[in-house]
Image 1 (spheres, rainbow, N blue to C red):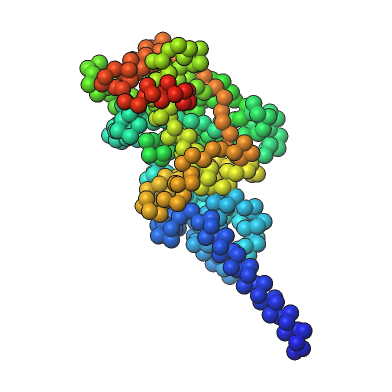
Image 2 (cartoon, one colour):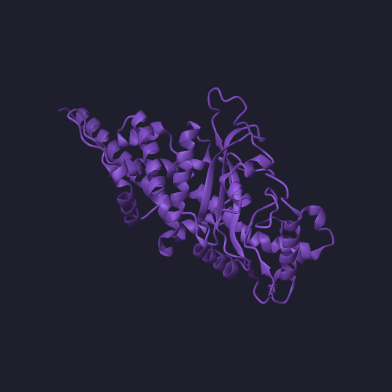
Amino acid sequence: MSDSDSDEEMLFLATIVEAEEQEQEYKRKHKIMSPEKFYELLELVKNDIEKMDTTFRRAIPPEERLSICLRFLATGDTFVTIAFSYRVGEKSVRRIIYETCEAIWKNLSPIYMSPPNQEQWQKIEEGFRTRWNFPNCVGSIDGKHVVINKPYHSGSLYFNYKKMCSLVLMAVVDAECKFIMVDVGGYGKNSDGSIFANSNFGERLREEKLDFPNDKSLPGTEEPMPHVIVGDEAFPLHKNLMRPYPGNALLNNEGNKIFNYRLSRARNTSEDAFGILSKRFRVYQRRLEMKPIYVNKIVRATCCLHNFLKSDSPRLLAEVIEDEKNTTVSEQGALQNLRNVGGAFAGISYATREKFRDYFLSPNGSVEWQNRVVREGRRYN
């Protein structure tokens, strides 16, 4: 072998080593869970993603299948890029990701996102009462347009008010920024009342099938009050769903401003949850370029994984949470805000809101800093 051939071989080997080092650094940078959590997750989904070897082909091991799926969710890399990294065909990568997302939802949702019973609702209420000073609150609701490519032969079905195609994700979040329930799949064109009314949560709220605990008095009072979900101005007012006072009700009315401030503190848990979801799973940093049925699988899987990872030790999550808590959703990303999704259900809704407002103004319900915050002009609606 000539010196020239030897130099070329050494250069080739150095290039391979450098590429492998870059690949390892890339995986480290975008790692979303500890090795312990990875293998815990693998045990939960293994039976549904493991394949048998055949006479002609060795099956891709479940560890690698899960790794491929998590790589896609964590980085948002294209199928082609992931296929090259794992030396797997692009079609195989697509199939592995969709099958694994389905397995994650199937096996994790009963553990980490099962519909709450009354005892669990009471525990959620305790979190909002003690951490966010909003007694009788059992959740914060928010919704996002999940931006997708226009499906073939769909007409204007998915075309939303921002002139993009989307599915609607509706979610209720607890005091710890974990998802209580998610509803995915509403058409982007559905606006105003139909988005909320047609969602699973909207139907269950309207039909009183959420199994909320019985009404109870606010601390220091005697009158029973309903348990409520809090949302922003996009959501309808209901006896079990509180929204802020509108802008025309805030002029020279400090009481209404204080109510809005107190509600916003509790409501921010859902905004934080979506911010964390978008930052941790960078697949949401751009539009999702697959059929709606697969978008549904990806969204549900990431919401389950969000809860699964939130139960990890604070030490392992510290670096992520430090960077994520105030993350805003990119205007170019896959998650975009909703417009208004409905008006008030009935007059009793207004009375309920006024009673909460009066409680927050009373000695029993006020917090010492609320007047200062509102008078300083901080955001409260």
